Image 1 (cartoon, rainbow over the protein chains, first blue to last red):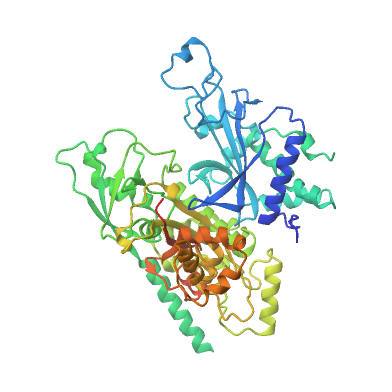
Image 2: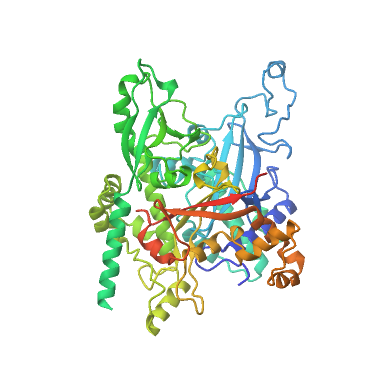
Length: 229
Length: 367
């Protein structure tokens, strides 16, 4: 059985875990154009007991200005960290520690999580963004960063595309892309080229998935992720 | 055989009537900060349908408090002992999970301002409750049939009628439409199977793409696991849930695999599969590890086999089972016996979005 993707566009839990590990590894190997942070694997815990098999992928601290481009930040500069980066005088005089280096209020920081759905047997994207003052972004603010096509879909289907729902492992509301049709388009994507080598096909599931999902939320994924090397 | 079927069907109808008729008496108090009248308004008494959702009660609650509310835009949410209540969890589940007593009426606080948007996903009106319901129904349909087509292909009129039946607790109207989704009852595993149905069963598990054919093999389950103190004599004395992080929410289908020699799957077996952390393969085992850790000098004969096992294998498991043990299981307000057939529970105690919601209390050792 291994963990190779089934022909129906779905993925087993083992397949998801293996594909995630392959993605984390490959992401580190390639030169990511936009110098995005690394994907990391976060184990889940139940009643304080960390799971050995269950977890999710995280890409945290993706900076975006209102032009929609991505910049890297130091990995240890996460959203709830207390790093204060010297800015201009006005910011230094702020009564609360600044969490973002930028002096512009236009910079937003995004976190992306990829969680396995046992129901749909596919990966699901959860994401959230916050402003420089730590405030969570509203849907209207997030719209600034969405590609025009996504805005169009969002306008047509308010309830079935990007919604705010409970993050399955953090118990807090995050934005999510609805997964109910994922296996259908994944089936089409995976049919296009047949790769025999298992490891290759494992990586291929998440990289193909990410190429579609990333595009929907304006997360640019380096082409090299999809290339053999 | 036919008589047995008829009897089973009659029982199922009775169960559905009771699930749909179930309600939690609520005493809703207006939050102090929202009171703008003197004297403050008396609390509002109402019945919250178990299968219903809190936001659906807002119109009547708002009417009751209308004279005492501050001017401006309302963002309504509910609280119980400091915990903001998730509006997308059915009322009965919230009550079973959060109210150990269970107190009647259930005293809730309603807020009209200061929506805790970091904790609760936004709820701007009835529409979003409807979509939350439809999304859950879609998910359950995908679990059961391998796709969501039967829900996606519903006519707009049927969708509206289905939601209206749930909103109004109209079981007859609900049945008319929901039976068309062909999410047929799960096959009772205890029944004798002929070779042909066996083959059909096999096929359906191999081909999740075939809706309506064969028998479903995945059951939509949502588990809510909360911890209570280990030394608790009476479950009613449990500390209230302070935040949602201390409740493990597990949205995971139960996959039925036929086990040789097992006549039917019990609720206990299903829970053990879904929550292996909280069951040791042998409860006695955990007790022994426990007492061994406490340096007890018991001379139980079964201990020798325990000790014969390589220590490293069971060490981690033992550590977890030592931490938590299932204390109580509640579904639709009923404290369930672990030996009852799981599929009976799934068929008869499910909510109208075809999910079986199970509240599990586990005892945890004090930190």
